[in-house]
Image (tube, rainbow, N blue to C red; front, side):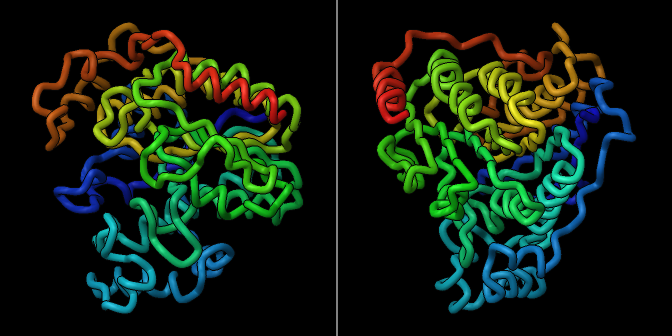
Length: 369
């Protein structure tokens, strides 16, 4: 198996959904800057993301919707019909400068990662991917294009027949589950916060037998995530023996995130990566949610470290610390950031007693299995 590859793009630098939007923050660009400042990136293993073509996007999305996105970018506005039908410019999905080019780049990176690994098994990290709420004909949950679904379709088109999709974002991976609801070749598993938008992914939702959902209660910690990992995710991967695993690593389950009420550390996310990176010959890791720029960059840069066997430094080197000190956040959490956000990569573990709801989820999963 070849050394891990990293796919990124400069399109994310300076691209924003608008000053008051949760995605006003720099995430992918900061992640790439931090990885480089840590000295962890061999330029030969970095790939500049291609942009998905219209033909590639319409493998999942409707031609009318893709055309509406392109129109919105060209005109920087949306007409009433497109807003109503496709939810562009509505529901937290604003018209912004790169409304077509940026999602097409995310999708192009994930499609490319899946095509590369289909041809030659390996591991690819695509932090710009993970827009798991996108629907075939509409934007949803800040997601205009479902790059995860498009990547999985690229694997299927290459002849793979046994794929596991794991999603640890704080929000249920509804778009991906819906995309493969009736396809026995793809099993989707989502660990997310219960009673949070999009208000789907209940424990009894098994999508015709091709899905498992773990809605964790508010305050769920590393203990809960590790319990799900060791008692559900790892045994499922061992039983399925997938040809490929896609892992969506949304960072909004971390304790500092303003859009969830989970209480995990980035070490919980890294444990999932560590457990799955060798569980299939092909592994593609995506980004996803995450609305605190410090915690997102530290989490996703740390994933690249895990993939390459790098231990996080006790203190960030000067260049890496400078990357973190340049960040700002116009929310309560950004008014007085704690010093470790600037100086460390690894969070202190956040362990607590396992939640009774988590224990019940795992018991029911064993019964189902």
